[in-house]
Image (cartoon, rainbow, N blue to C red):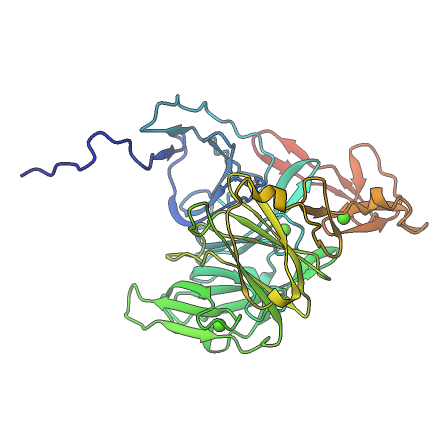
Length: 442
Ligand SMILES: [Ca+2]
Ligand SMILES: [Ca+2]
Ligand SMILES: [Ca+2]
Ligand SMILES: [Ca+2]
């Protein structure tokens, strides 16, 4: 008897989005995917790292269509038609890439695990991923003249090729600084796992320090997947690694050895139906260390997915308030009491009547203040305190959570002072399809 569908008339719950390249661009093999507001303020963008072809960075245009923004210098343009099937909407027009982003297409490497995080705590989402036996990438998201580009800050040790599978970004010792764990696959020879701490600096790129992974070194491990979660509820992240594919190996579970006295907070945003709110953005404002950002990532890792919890390590600092932004743009903020430190906070999806109750003053902490919309935002010290900078460095530059002062260096046309005003740097030029050049004149 032929199989009769049980739902002959009903509209399908899920419609397929066809995202395919023009015929001249062969389809690469998808390996890693990460979903969250990477470029958008709330809507979910999609980063895919691929093998045998360029990576994708699909920017959500907010109307059901995406544009691939991954191509940059050295890559070929990825102009993609985006269309829906199973629905009545006309096909979206061909979306031509105009090149405001740089460098995450990485067309000659073979991506594996990927994770989203804000490593330099500037409020912009950064991307880390591993390439199979190729250089691993740590891309900071930068803004230049209102446009966005990515800059790889991976050190030689960090980028050293390995047969990598899962990549995890998490604060294993709750000291505020994120660690990155590479789960390697002992392919044809030993290949130990690796652990790095990304140490945020006030006015500079983060420092990358290699750490001893201890028992998680597993030089003969055939690691395939890995996740962190807090199994025993002690506020310290635990690591579970799976192995196999070409040889049976048991699961491994590890617990942290350091940082037991540090403060922590775990935040669980929910959808309106009570499910985990994947794609949500969680910002924790603190008393001393500014804003910390986490994405409830719908994806990441490799052959696995991270827990839908925003885990914050705070060292000796304490949270002052928390803000959650859902993918549909809804936002909720609330204070965090001292008595709530070292616990799990559930954040429900806001109902409309919650808005009235949200008018209570928020504790935004150092560098941030409550704005007219009721939420914490960066304080613009340069406007609020016009004489904040000393005479020898009179130019005030506002930054996320702080500000800096630089010398009043004059530059020729087409150039501008660098961050500390010690040299002139060519203004970023965007040429042709995705080609972005930055020239230095010292
Ligand atoms: Ca960042
Ligand atoms: Ca840490
Ligand atoms: Ca634990
Ligand atoms: Ca500021």
